[in-house]
Image (cartoon, rainbow, N blue to C red; front, side, top):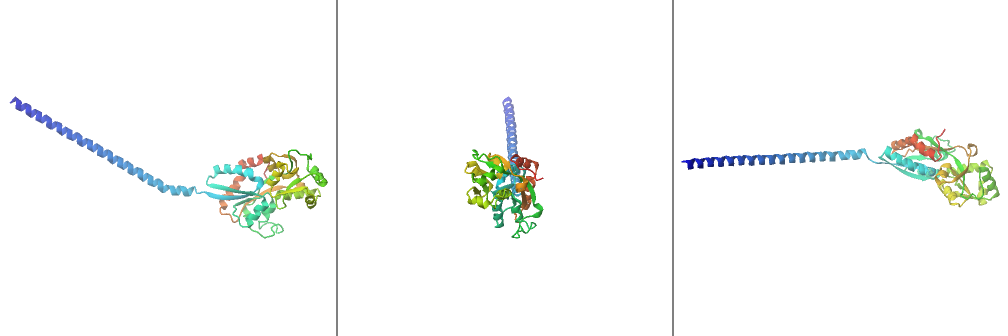
Length: 310
């Protein structure tokens, strides 16, 4: 009897134990299933977020679309505008500035012939006037209408200077000395061509001293450059005794300035700027022109000898 009772008790214990194990297995299975479901849901949410981000990307790309603004500027602005372009990248990272530096006369011809240009900055009023329909017809002889009148502004003033080579064998210290040496035929002077603003200012200085450019050229005392940078290079290399260039170029090249021309000798050296009518990005070009007139940019200009127009 006792044996039978023990046997029954053992059987009950075994049944209860198996039931408990079954419950544990079911619980473990449920937990695993729940974990798998949660993981699947998380993957689904992540995939959904990825799709949403991917859908937003085109809109972001469209918002930061790069714009190419082409600036034609006088060669004497090469260093300053290159420096200012770095400042503008921080101001407008979506605007890429492309510069074309040369003599204002050459730039004017390129624009007239159809070159793509958004903003033009000349080293002289003449080249701008030749493209401005509101200018004197005696200057704008071809009746060109390429300038957006409401954007034109006199942005900077420069100075015309007499610079000498490092040795300065002629001992020049003024424009008076230059005039005397040219009359004697004892020096070689570099100047810009007649279509280059700095060359035109030099012609006025020669006229002020009643010197004939044609006679001087015939006598072999004048060497020409197609832009102010070429004249500057001739002085720096010592291939000429002296040359007439802007104070900004003298500063950039580390040349010695011995004298500055007065307004009576050659007039004011004013740099006009304007957005052109054929600009593909007139708003961005005008924005950059406005930026050039800020105090931050004027500090860059003034550091090399430019000044605000008074």
